[in-house]
Length: 279
Image (tube, rainbow, N blue to C red; front, side):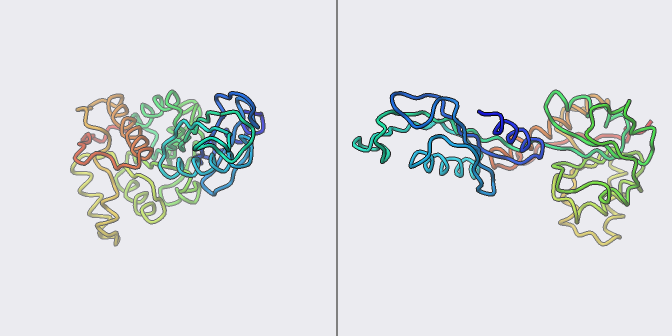
């Protein structure tokens, strides 16, 4: 892949835009492109680079569009021999193998509340190449020293969260806060604006209180069903570090399910977390 395409691929990854990369991985005889020739295709239908042009390139573009639809790559063989059954309408005479790779958008988390659980979650994410930002209305709990690898650290009120952040930039919103009233405000302002996964860390009593307040604020039952609470995969987690493992496991599951275009498994129990994210 040339440098321009490498920069474009990195930019798409940084912007969390899925794309397909098609690369010539093997060539035999006379062919229009050499090994390593690459084409990128985005969900808007735009293509960049080339694997050789003509009928070969059109077939590869079709495969790339299919990969964007199915979230699945494939290895394709093409004979550039018009006289051969199944060959492309080409007189080059050689053959090529093209690897079509689907590159999914990586998760991007917004953590509301910079307490103990948020800190434990944040420590696990860099190794998984999962980006995150953290927001809190307490400056001392969202500092650079506390979250050095966060993309953004914002001191912001619950009511103004989406004035500071762009909702479409995130795949998950986790409320790991310390105050039921403020968590309720974040949820009240989020469910109509944020389309990703929403998780609330809460005891049974807190969850009942928050949901009752949201109903009084006019939110519908369908909106409330979007809120995952308890959060995380059920591993009987108790400590902040254990809860973080269960939450990150949930993120990975969501990501893999999206890749496979299949919903998370029904009945996958989640941990009932106590309100331990505050100091």
